[in-house]
Length: 323
Image (cartoon, rainbow, N blue to C red; front, side, top):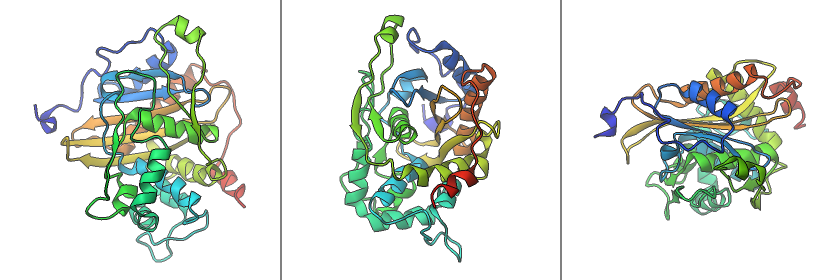
């Protein structure tokens, strides 16, 4: 069947193996996804343990275009190479230009096209590989590694940093990268326990440490801003329980489907999690909708008091720490 004619709604839980999952997290994720065609990966960023994967068949596939979640790679690469800093103003379709915080929050394409053109293909590919793309993110046998193109897109390397053209991303790869941003730079192998014995014997497996800790304070205001006033506003559910995230919306013409991505993490209470949502299907699918699904996961868990109590964080407070 042509994917364009497939319904946007389906049972995304069919065939999932759940014996080693955190059932509280799984229930929250399944309720949040509802009847959408899609996958949700929830992980512990401090260890790489996967708490739940809803729609494992989709999560283990070859991968899809990252859409604007590729701007996370672009931001970290640009900061690492000294192309941008928190106060850099790049052309962003406005007279005054735009800073990194607003560019991430609003997912500004001209800003990140400029970053990509300055980086060039070789450096973009280098950082994408360093951050785990083109290789398996987990110890799961069925997971596919995705891919990174051998040459830039016809429209230039800027399209790699705007929409991720030339990269096939899996939900697990995005979860691993977001986990590294959340934990200060540790890129873990994601592990999906299959039983209670697996949970009892769980040992984190570090793939490599990424030298990004100094740049994360420059990323977080934009990722929080995306939820507070940018493309991910549907994720917000409680100002005292902030979410940091990045949306992605595009059409993957190779598989003829619309995509909605959202990669996110929280910093509330004693249990911090990463939530990645991938939606596929017809026209109703986009990044803001994926953000809303992720927000529902966090809200459902908050109502279960899963996170415990934490102190509120504000975007203004984060920006002030950069100075």
